[in-house]
Amino acid sequence: MKAKPEKYERGTRSYTMSHIRGKDTSIEVMVRRYLFSRGLRFRKNDKRYPGHPDIVLPKWHTVVFVNGCFWHMHEGCTKHSMPKSNVEFWSAKLLRNRERDRAQHAALEAMGWRVIVVWECELAKPVRQERLERLYTQIVGGDAAPAVPSDTAS
Image 1 (cartoon, one colour):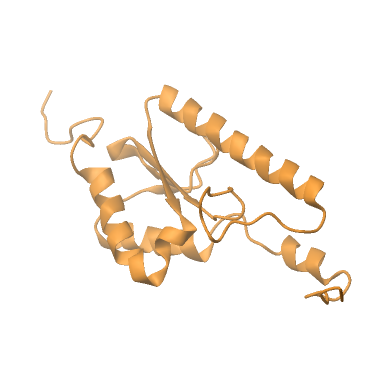
Image 2 (image 1 turned 135 degrees about the vertical axis):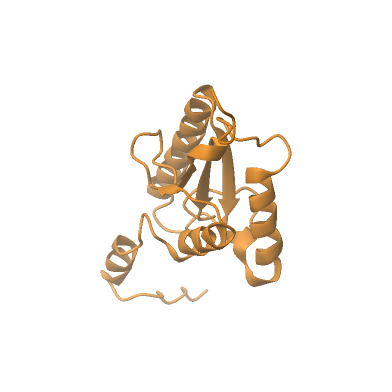
Protein backbone atom coordinates (compact mmCIF):
# COMPACT_ATOMS: atom_id res chain seq x y z
CA MET A 1 0.00 0.00 0.00
CA LYS A 2 1.45 3.34 -1.05
CA ALA A 3 1.67 6.06 1.62
CA LYS A 4 -0.50 9.10 1.06
CA PRO A 5 1.63 12.10 0.04
CA GLU A 6 1.92 14.92 2.57
CA LYS A 7 -0.40 17.84 1.95
CA TYR A 8 2.26 20.31 3.12
CA GLU A 9 6.01 20.62 2.64
CA ARG A 10 8.07 19.90 5.74
CA GLY A 11 7.73 22.82 8.17
CA THR A 12 4.81 24.42 6.33
CA ARG A 13 2.11 22.86 8.52
CA SER A 14 3.61 24.35 11.68
CA TYR A 15 3.84 27.77 10.04
CA THR A 16 0.25 27.55 8.81
CA MET A 17 -1.11 26.46 12.20
CA SER A 18 0.79 29.26 13.97
CA HIS A 19 -1.14 31.84 11.92
CA ILE A 20 -4.60 30.71 12.97
CA ARG A 21 -6.15 33.61 14.80
CA GLY A 22 -7.43 33.42 18.36
CA LYS A 23 -9.81 36.34 18.10
CA ASP A 24 -11.50 38.42 15.40
CA THR A 25 -11.98 35.32 13.27
CA SER A 26 -14.26 35.59 10.25
CA ILE A 27 -17.10 33.78 12.04
CA GLU A 28 -16.79 36.04 15.11
CA VAL A 29 -16.87 39.15 12.94
CA MET A 30 -19.92 37.78 11.09
CA VAL A 31 -21.83 37.23 14.35
CA ARG A 32 -20.82 40.63 15.75
CA ARG A 33 -21.91 42.44 12.56
CA TYR A 34 -25.27 40.73 12.66
CA LEU A 35 -25.89 41.56 16.33
CA PHE A 36 -24.75 45.18 15.84
CA SER A 37 -27.05 45.56 12.82
CA ARG A 38 -29.94 44.35 15.00
CA GLY A 39 -29.21 47.14 17.49
CA LEU A 40 -27.39 45.17 20.17
CA ARG A 41 -24.34 46.74 21.78
CA PHE A 42 -21.65 44.61 23.34
CA ARG A 43 -18.06 44.30 24.43
CA LYS A 44 -15.71 41.92 22.68
CA ASN A 45 -13.13 39.61 24.23
CA ASP A 46 -13.61 41.13 27.68
CA LYS A 47 -10.72 39.99 29.86
CA ARG A 48 -12.67 40.54 33.08
CA TYR A 49 -14.61 37.31 32.59
CA PRO A 50 -13.49 33.67 32.54
CA GLY A 51 -12.59 32.61 29.02
CA HIS A 52 -12.60 36.17 27.64
CA PRO A 53 -15.98 35.69 25.92
CA ASP A 54 -16.10 36.67 22.25
CA ILE A 55 -19.19 38.81 22.88
CA VAL A 56 -20.41 40.20 26.22
CA LEU A 57 -23.87 41.77 26.32
CA PRO A 58 -24.08 43.41 29.77
CA LYS A 59 -27.66 44.70 29.30
CA TRP A 60 -28.88 41.14 28.72
CA HIS A 61 -26.41 39.54 31.15
CA THR A 62 -25.39 37.17 28.36
CA VAL A 63 -22.07 36.05 26.91
CA VAL A 64 -21.57 34.46 23.51
CA PHE A 65 -18.72 32.20 22.50
CA VAL A 66 -18.22 31.66 18.76
CA ASN A 67 -16.38 28.34 18.57
CA GLY A 68 -14.52 26.64 15.76
CA CYS A 69 -15.64 23.02 15.49
CA PHE A 70 -12.09 21.64 15.24
CA TRP A 71 -10.51 23.59 18.09
CA HIS A 72 -13.36 23.05 20.54
CA MET A 73 -14.16 19.42 19.57
CA HIS A 74 -17.76 19.89 18.43
CA GLU A 75 -19.22 16.43 18.97
CA GLY A 76 -21.07 14.90 16.05
CA CYS A 77 -19.85 17.58 13.65
CA THR A 78 -18.28 16.79 10.30
CA LYS A 79 -15.88 19.74 10.70
CA HIS A 80 -14.27 18.09 13.73
CA SER A 81 -11.95 15.16 13.17
CA MET A 82 -8.93 14.08 15.13
CA PRO A 83 -5.69 14.60 13.15
CA LYS A 84 -4.12 11.37 11.96
CA SER A 85 -0.55 12.38 12.80
CA ASN A 86 0.82 13.24 16.24
CA VAL A 87 -2.42 11.87 17.72
CA GLU A 88 -1.22 11.94 21.33
CA PHE A 89 -0.40 15.66 21.17
CA TRP A 90 -3.62 16.66 19.40
CA SER A 91 -5.96 14.59 21.52
CA ALA A 92 -4.44 15.99 24.73
CA LYS A 93 -4.58 19.57 23.39
CA LEU A 94 -8.15 19.38 22.14
CA LEU A 95 -9.39 17.62 25.29
CA ARG A 96 -7.75 20.36 27.38
CA ASN A 97 -9.59 22.95 25.27
CA ARG A 98 -12.92 21.19 25.84
CA GLU A 99 -12.40 20.86 29.60
CA ARG A 100 -11.28 24.49 29.87
CA ASP A 101 -14.43 25.58 27.99
CA ARG A 102 -16.64 23.60 30.36
CA ALA A 103 -14.96 25.09 33.44
CA GLN A 104 -15.21 28.64 32.06
CA HIS A 105 -18.89 28.23 31.16
CA ALA A 106 -19.65 26.85 34.63
CA ALA A 107 -17.81 29.78 36.25
CA LEU A 108 -19.74 32.31 34.14
CA GLU A 109 -23.06 30.64 34.95
CA ALA A 110 -22.15 30.67 38.65
CA MET A 111 -21.59 34.43 38.28
CA GLY A 112 -25.14 34.72 36.92
CA TRP A 113 -24.33 35.02 33.20
CA ARG A 114 -26.21 33.20 30.47
CA VAL A 115 -23.77 31.42 28.18
CA ILE A 116 -24.58 30.83 24.50
CA VAL A 117 -22.27 28.91 22.18
CA VAL A 118 -22.43 29.39 18.42
CA TRP A 119 -20.59 26.72 16.44
CA GLU A 120 -18.74 27.29 13.19
CA CYS A 121 -20.87 24.67 11.39
CA GLU A 122 -24.04 26.56 12.39
CA LEU A 123 -22.76 29.51 10.37
CA ALA A 124 -22.50 27.64 7.07
CA LYS A 125 -24.37 29.50 4.35
CA PRO A 126 -27.49 27.26 4.15
CA VAL A 127 -28.30 27.60 7.88
CA ARG A 128 -26.54 30.88 8.77
CA GLN A 129 -29.52 33.26 8.73
CA GLU A 130 -31.68 30.94 10.79
CA ARG A 131 -28.94 30.51 13.43
CA LEU A 132 -28.22 34.24 13.65
CA GLU A 133 -31.94 35.00 14.08
CA ARG A 134 -32.19 32.30 16.74
CA LEU A 135 -29.15 33.79 18.51
CA TYR A 136 -30.82 37.22 18.57
CA THR A 137 -33.99 35.64 19.98
CA GLN A 138 -31.95 33.73 22.59
CA ILE A 139 -30.42 37.01 23.71
CA VAL A 140 -33.45 39.31 23.81
CA GLY A 141 -36.48 37.01 23.78
CA GLY A 142 -38.25 34.85 26.30
CA ASP A 143 -36.53 34.58 29.67
CA ALA A 144 -33.77 36.92 28.54
CA ALA A 145 -34.98 40.02 30.36
CA PRO A 146 -32.33 42.69 30.91
CA ALA A 147 -30.46 42.34 34.18
CA VAL A 148 -31.30 45.93 35.12
CA PRO A 149 -34.43 47.48 33.58
CA SER A 150 -33.35 50.70 31.88
CA ASP A 151 -36.70 52.54 31.93
CA THR A 152 -37.56 52.30 35.63
CA ALA A 153 -37.22 55.38 37.79
CA SER A 154 -35.85 55.06 41.31
